[in-house]
Length: 520
Ligand SMILES: NC(=O)c1ccc[n+]([C@@H]2O[C@H](COP(=O)([O-])OP(=O)(O)OC[C@H]3O[C@@H](n4cnc5c(N)ncnc54)[C@H](OP(=O)(O)O)[C@@H]3O)[C@@H](O)[C@H]2O)c1
Picture (cartoon, rainbow, N blue to C red):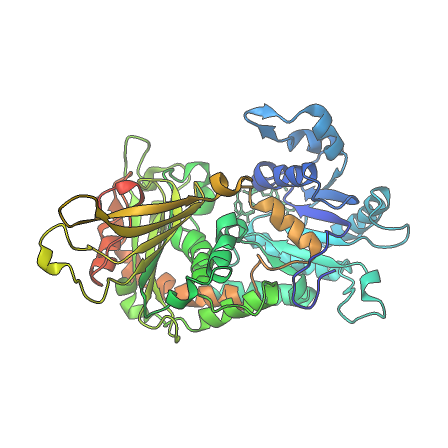
């Protein structure tokens, strides 16, 4: 059971996970492999079962066959898989139909007893997971509420709260498509679940190095004194992909880069760079800081949205058609595949320091990184020594999130020799090389956290609404969406993105030494 701070130091509780969307892509590609890996590492509770729910008729064995994961192109060893697969069960039904839930309840009771999660006549702990289309979230939450499956357990505090079963729910992204829909979804959740039973997943927060940002900032004492407007010129967060929309056009065309990446993942990454020191590493303290930060964002005036953001869409290239000609894309929607925006936090630490966020498809490199650009030295004492003896810029700390998790710090040094020449170089730290270990898919640890009642890496209601509030004027701006530029695949996006920074006298740090301003 979790403490009042939402962070749990113990192991995961026995539970039955009810996975809505069991026949879908996310289940097969991410969730089952993540659970299997967690089981292999001994992270899952000993008493655990999963009940997959979707409409397709399947037996338990057919479901197990369908979700059997592969490793390096080959199916997982049958013996290893078979043992784990025995924990997987299937229940066919329409999750939007309230009538289904009585039978599901009975089924869960049976599975709970069979798997040792609960005693006969008692309800098991239940972890719901919504891995269905977002339109189904509210109907399913409503049905769960009406079904009586949520017993409120600890909510009205029985004498021994630990003895009552819990019910928690993990909600996949997208969490709303704008501020109003996110608020509506939060209200729907709040009618059925307590806030501390709601797990809004953002798998970016499960990525190692995103957590490492907090360790870097708060386990070291050398960074925090310079981590502010006095020393930092600006911050960049980039998440770039080389691939196009692929087979996910149906989903992506309704979302676009601003909703799919910037509002959710990049805003969260930026928040970890920008929050004040939490009192402790726990969910409640970190969430409080993130909420406070988002509420300090300078509101973007809708009529001036093009000064705060730039949108783009990839054109045709050797690797595929232009976005508008991709299968499943409706050109009339005018969806963007690239978004860059500026965010400013008006607080004592960051006032006047812009955060530039950008993300796009079919860009020059697959990379996710955070760049902390420090100020130039206040004066250049080498100026009289002529060319070659002048630092070009301030120091730059790059936090590599993926691929290759690590840090590089750009510093200047004297080139050995008679002449006074200054050159920049990178101090590199590769986390895996240095510390060993391996990067894990984010889903496994996040799922286990939910079973432990630890929400540290999940999002609070107010955070989600806070980040939508920041982006809402951009979503509503006709001028911004009317000015979507086409960019060349393999470039770093549209010219407008470069102009967003050049207007401020800055430029993007493009990893891999690609030229700046490679617009179409
Ligand atoms: N795929 C990804 O990589 C990814 C990444 C991040 C987030 N997400 C999010 O995760 C969710 C699922 O994505 P997905 O790609 O797995 O979608 P998907 O492949 O289309 O799967 C949707 C699932 O929902 C089930 N379903 C549809 N209507 C149902 C109903 N009335 N009752 C019960 N089950 C129903 C479908 O099964 P039946 O047709 O058999 O009912 C299927 O199992 C979406 O919200 C998506 O945005 C996906």
